[in-house]
Amino acid sequence: MAATTHTVTNQVPPLVGYDVFATDRALTEAVERHIAPEILPEAQTELGALGLSAGSAQAQQWGAQANENPPTLHTHDRYGHRVDEVEFHPAWHRLLGHAVSGGLTDAWGRPAGHVRRAAGFLVWTQAEAGHGCPLSMTHAAVPALRTDPALAAEWEPLLTSHVYEEGLRPASQKAGVLFGMGMTEKQGGTDVRSNTTRAEPLAADGEYLLTGHKWFCSAPMSDGFLVLAQAPGGLSCFLVPRVLPDGARNVFAIQRLKDKLGNRSNASSEVEFDGTWARRVGEEGRGVRTIIEMVAATRLDCVVGSSALMRQAVAQAIHHTAYRSAFGGLLIEKPLMRNVLADLALESEAATTLALRLAAAYDADTEEERAFLRIAVPTAKYWVTKRCSAVVGEALECLGGNGYVEESGMPRLLREAPLNSIWEGSGNVQALDVLRALQREPQALNAFLQEVGKARGADHRLDAAIKDLLTELADLDSVEARARRLVERMALVLQGSLLLRWAPPEVADAFCASRLGGDWGSAFGTLPHSLDLASVVERARAQDR
Image (cartoon, rainbow, N blue to C red):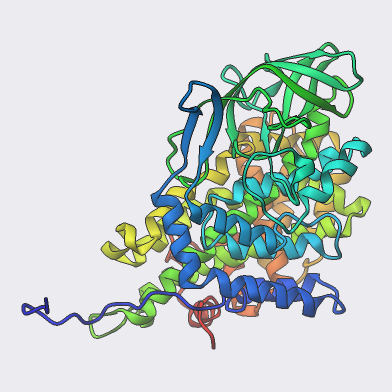
């Protein structure tokens, strides 16, 4: 029925049908910067295709459907046999299939693989974030498995495959597999050394039976899992396949699915092991050391994933204000709104620039870059993931009441925003990890300071911030209570250095004035009014120019 009470006007068209990659200037410039010219055209074509898919109406519909129809647990079949299967909406499988075919589990064996994958992950996560969990863990399992050449030869080609095959079957019968991870238990959480799951050796070398539980086990329909358990020689890492080589189901009793704040499309579960067959990965008693490279890689994905959420939130806020009129003009042209948008855009660009720099360090794989990652990954994970909730919340407010309703997509972003700050170690864990690196690995601090120092002399506010940071680093006695303050300062100095080297002057100037120079309030939208804020906002706008 036609409306008779009023005419609908001043409504914003949806941000749809655009290239998520090509319209993100901070990301496209980072890709150009970190990928060699001979590889760049291929990577740009690959990322452009993914960007068009991510911005399509179809992908947006898949994302909505996967979250509106969360996974369902089926513990038994109709006859009472345990099946321990999780049913997902078809949209979930479409998202995963598109991601795997786009190379989002393939970084370790191709040129510039980490930068290409990180950029793709940042792009595709903007369509839907929940299915990023199995993608991330599958990607991150590779370095852990490489501690055992036989296991790596068996599994790595399947983990890095560009073919997604749903369903539980022996890995030998599939063209590609996904992996999960189980570390935490009820009594310990992050304190994995208090794990009680037992691993009893079998006669065959490297084979064990596990008895115990995992309190958080994400993506339980994956083909294999890396888990920690107590072997006779101490806490060790094990590979648990869902299906045994002979086709029988391994003992993997899913007790329930977690009812989470966000990440609704992804199944996070509680599982029980009771005589569960497993293969040891690495040496007995060195489980944490074996799995730590997997943890580091997933932590980087937390940085990339948060950068993606921030980018999508800022893109939506700028898009909305560019079309919505109030008080005699477009919102984007109002000085106060422009200040808010520019402030949000700075946070997003700084996160993206840092995330891609870390990915490039993985590709370089030199001793210096590995040392840099040791301290830069937990630093970035601490800061970027914490900024995500604040950015998404402010971006939602830019849409007003329209942003508070589900149809806008902003509530889903806001519910997702805290996740990466918690997954793979919450804020305190990251800060303490940085402290350990500072106290035990002087080469890591040296690599970090060398990276920061590459922009020294380019801005007096950065120079002053580096000087203050060096003063703090000179006194590490009783530092734990101020660890968060120290790590925050390290992250901001690193971001400032990167932006001064690579971002346009108006972006670097605004970042240094606010984040390093102290000319900033306690909320977004408090940048110095004398800055070129219009250019900052226009740079961050997600539309073809």
